[in-house]
Image (tube, rainbow, N blue to C red; front, side, top):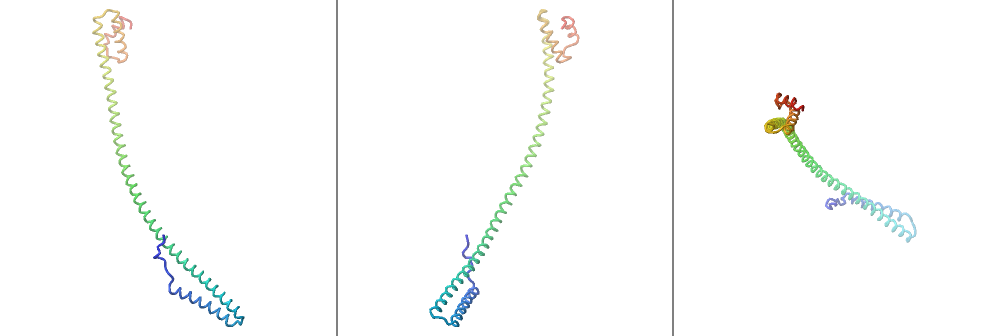
Length: 195
């Protein structure tokens, strides 16, 4: 919106120049009317026509002059407004860029810390899994040894038909976990029952 207080009105010099141009035109008309001896009606008609034309031309000139000053004032005001808006937008962009940069730095730091913690925890979990697997193997071997001893205890009280089932189980466990059964007992089973 144009600020009306910023519009410049006609200066005194501009007003004097316009009046001088009007006086010159009137002087030219007066000179033509005095030196040309024509009929009075025709003389008055020409004088009236010259006055109307002069007023019309001067009005157009004044209008154009005022319009140029108005357009210049509008352009100046628009340029000032655009500069103000540009400054505000630049300030907002700078603030947003600063916040985004700060967020990126903080996010990067946190992501690096999380990744480091993740790698440490992953290594710990792998180590625990490895230990668990080793302990499970030891535990399975101990269970197999206990089962062999249990089978040997049960074999002492059973008849031959039932003993064969336990002997087969002992041979199977020794195949899975070599060395859990004593070699003498194993050789005796193999020789006696051909297992």
